[in-house]
Length: 634
Ligand code: M6R
Image (cartoon, rainbow, N blue to C red; front, side):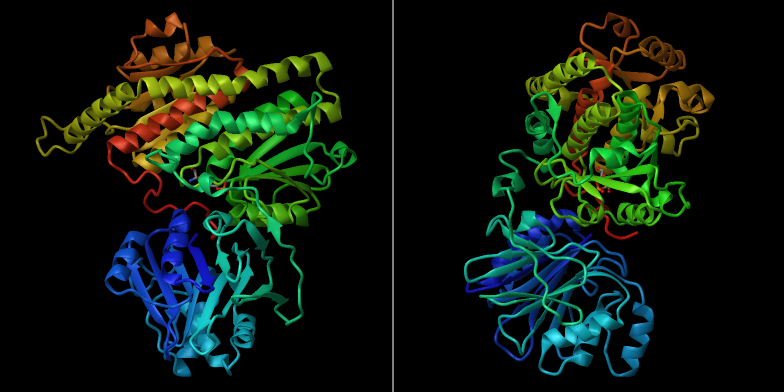
């Protein structure tokens, strides 16, 4: 939630801040701002409502010169998204400026006290108390003032602070919100994540909770909140700048969809050596795993759907009971986990507040914890007992795609790994399954090639859908009672069974979040217990129906929908003639593959459907409204 970028060096800071914020825009994009030391008594700043291009435009008209600056892109928590609430926030005299990512829980109390001592508040944000506190404690030493101010604050933060009286210096601090230092040549950077630094450096320091950082052009100093020096190693990250760019694709989302077969191939190559699974970074031993009697997966959003697929995989491979919970439910439920439980947290960002809280809860109850995560040195990966990285490269689009398939790939491998430890699969079966797994990326690739070949057709279908959809809406909202239909308006139902049921949830989530079309995912067998009442000629029913043990059942479920006039769009295995007889509106064929691995293949058309619908509707695909890439608040 929110992105922070800071620069100090010899270069003009303004363009660097704008460029850095653009890389972080996926974290929040309702307003943005920049504060620069320009050698005068007060700090120069600019803030605008809306996307970073508005800030860029404002700065083009009134550029701010200077070599040390901090910037912010916001996802509003306290206070509506407007110019006043945008960061940076400044003290009464505009000599200190702060940007902040996180939530200050005791801000109301602090605000009242500060107001009484003369602080003039200009915004409705929780953040503004930080700058007034720092100003209150400032005695010609910004570092000490920040340290003192943080003692009064309760909540979570990554902050960056500059003061007009201390040229070339940025003071920053972190508690439960991400912050990375980028080390350059006679210049240093701060950012909420690594992807924003890659244009300048891949030498970084991952800051830890409780650290206070002072960066100047030539130095980086880290201490704890009591002022004692702390040492954090500088690390070379293997992400590159090309991964954080669109590379010729119109959107990050479609670029990331197309990266998936390559990512799964890379995961297989990295993790399988001599027919054995290797998790070099894992830190948990086989004997520790042997003590567990059950597994609980916690995650949010798309990562939760990966966890649901994981349940099928781990139960099938490792013959162990697996429960799956959304992190926000798990953490408040006094969950029954203990020493005999392995809690697996799944998260792309590794920063999701609910998952982090769930992990802490599990640790407090004595459970063994493991995180499957994409972002190196993220909070979850640091706090969990063990970590497995997905190595999918930076995922920039807010709608998660490649992280999902990478998480699935790792869950299959974890299944194999456990099968080895618990001796639940004979070697011959393991070898057969692994061989099959190696063929999956090429099957995923075939779907993408089909899409490329038939892109015009997909776009035409999306256009056709758009027309029908709006015609349906017109009927629904018509003021003419004869035209008005007493039925739900156009929406999508996604149906799946077994290991493909979670993909029904995932397909619906993708459509909701980027095309803003109401959509529901359902286990097909549940339709008759209620939702079938919704069926008439209005909903569009996407049926995930590849060859599987429940294919015949799926056909019956689809027949029931057809019998009630429903529009069906099945995802079927190539050569499936039975489904054609049901006269679908369109059908999407996927290469033949075993049911067990099919979620890695069936999810691709679902991602592409959402992408095409959002593009047809002209939506902002990479930065959908109201969302942010990582949800670091509850
Ligand atoms: O970073 P995480 O994987 O923990 O994020 C979890 C969810 O916030 C995330 O999957 C969200 O649902 C995506 N926008 C889905 O596309």
